[in-house]
Image: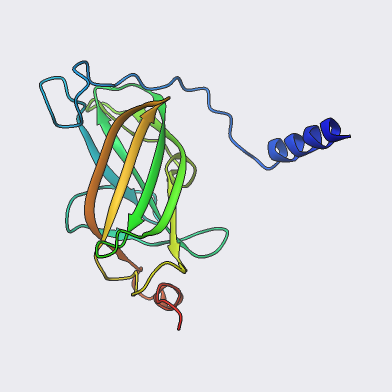
Length: 192
């Protein structure tokens, strides 16, 4: 009976639309074992985010990151990274938003980061961003002690190829509701 139940659950998951990924793992681990940016063989990587329009933008310290209305409700940040010198491939990516004062995690997501190589030699998240990069759910959040919208938080994205960490990228960012999205402003304010 337990095996039949497990088979049924597996069938439900398959029917739920979980994408099948045929891309190989990315093999971009620095030859010297160093971190991103360290040493002559370091992996070159940059944080990216996408808004409602799906357009990718680079993220650096001080950058605003759009809060996107999630299909399942709430607001998320679509975050990931692009890598130089990789190929069409897949990494495991974890995105986290932390309160810089307490270090407390406000939102977290882990999923496959699907990368496609452009003419410029950079591999970046494939289209559509909603299914090809972490969806960090940040609003509403019971962990937030202040408004998420318009305040600085620490964004962390960790990329792994199997058990090997390829890169950990961080930046202080400002999650930002879209102009005119009053629901976002309300949802991203902590409750009493």
